Amino acid sequence: MPDRSMFSRRSFLVKSAAGLTAMSAMRFSPADDAEATDDASPQDSQLIDCHLHINHFDRSIEDTIRHMDATGTTQAFVLPLETGEGGVTLHSETVLHSFINYPDRVIPFCQTDIRQPDVLERIRAYHLLGCRGIGEQKEHVPLKDKRVEAVIALCDELNWPITIHFQDGDNGYNQGIQEDLEPYLKRYKQVRIIGHAQSWWANISADVPEGDLYPTGPVKPGGLLDRLMGDYPNLYADLSAGSGFNALSRDEDFTGGFLERNRKQILFGSDCPCRDGEGENFKGMCYSTQLQKFLRRMISDEDALADVFANNALRALNGTT
Image (cartoon, rainbow, N blue to C red; front, top):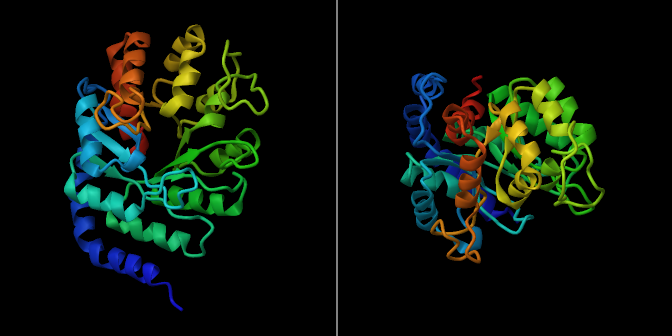
């Protein structure tokens, strides 16, 4: 029997394409992009969260906007998670609907199961609908899987960013960061790969304890992140969630230099599930406000802070340097 949900989702894509494509063209015109990424005039008041989901802990889109207002977030990359393998299910169509309702606040990304045979067809449809990138890429497949490469190659063709959740281990996602990320960076120069999650941030250090996804203590210089970001300007670091904050706060003497060396490739992001910027539904914790305070303390140069808070997100989004 045909899958009626598949037909209804395809019908949504077809019926919505014209209006959303026109909206996207107006919202993100090349002229606007050039002006927004002008390094000579960083916007101190602009804060772009590169990693936000709508329905963390059953949060509504209205609650998500409330969180953004409370934390001073002007715009956010809103990332779907279609398979629900990480505990949150959020469809790309829901993100596109939020973009229709809040076009000045939501920057829509798309994500669909890479193990399905129509994955590239669906991503192309989302591109026509106004999505600006892929993320969060998070399925239980190793990084070297050819289906992962096919999606990265399509991002390269579309001049898109892709946010990848790196988590080694038997039940992880995109395992094999140390061996398998650099070949993609060598092969694909247009795509902006945005690294996120536990194994990404464990590799801030040259010493990565096996099986420890949240290592603590001093960072050993010469880690994979410094090396790869130094060699590949299309690689970006997403500071979000507990993994990002743990990596930055474990050794502040190292962190200051890390932020300075990579100031054009560091993206502010929260991955925060709270509704009000104060942790109303998250044990009194807000990842966004916590990280903002930390970065303002660690980065004294206002231009560098503007890069991390907004300019780098626009570079990653638009493919500018």
